[in-house]
Image 1 (cartoon, one colour):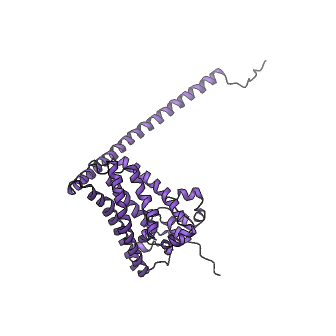
Image 2: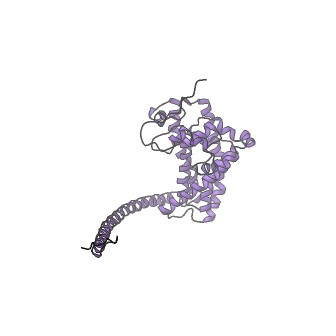
Image 3: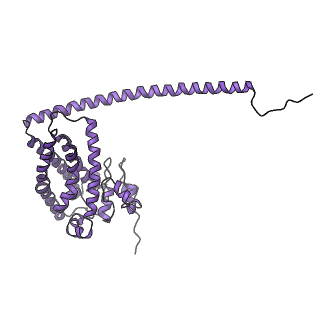
Length: 335
């Protein structure tokens, strides 16, 4: 009786069985993936519809508000420009810093002061130093920033669409903010490093670094030349290059002033951008020169910061527990 030798290859029946199983698997995958794609598409369409409705409603509100404001000023471009580029950002800056200064001076409310970054510093703040900082900040605003709006006004007027009755779309607004932020990062980083050169630091930038533990109003406490070079021009350049609408300028200037106040405020408050990066610069002087930190990473000017506890705390706080407690600094060794 002869034995059948196994060739090592599947028989025709086994091959057909494998093909059928593969085809069934493909069909099942197509059904599952197709169903998931349909559900995802339907969900995205619904979300997009609701988002678009919100944008449309919000856009209608802002457009109507702008037209009322336009009529209130009777279309006078200079008045509209002063309102948007000077008054609105200044109110945003001083209202925000007014709250912080109450906490700095009185130590209350504790729901702000418990988030202090440099523990034991400015607790309470030296009122004489604070008055000096306020006087310098007001001088820089009224005698430097506001006069610089005059040439800016004529640049914007040349573009021709800054005072249009129609506001830009929300998508265009977001794109402009992205461009402004990138321009500010580049100009601020390199101008900031420039004023850290020994000669310029001694005569110009040292004034700003009198505060090793900064507070909000110190964000524009600077030598007049530095205020022009590092504080004002990096923020003004983007809108001038883009020919932005005055409403966008008002929003951008307000956002820039509030965010730099947060960076200097000395408190790592919940749900706000982290101030650890720039606070570390005031503490160490030769680290963290930029705004976003992108150029610091590329140039290696954040290497010490990245090895510190401050870097671990450099994130948006999403709880009510101060990061100084959950990620405390390493205690200094007793000498």
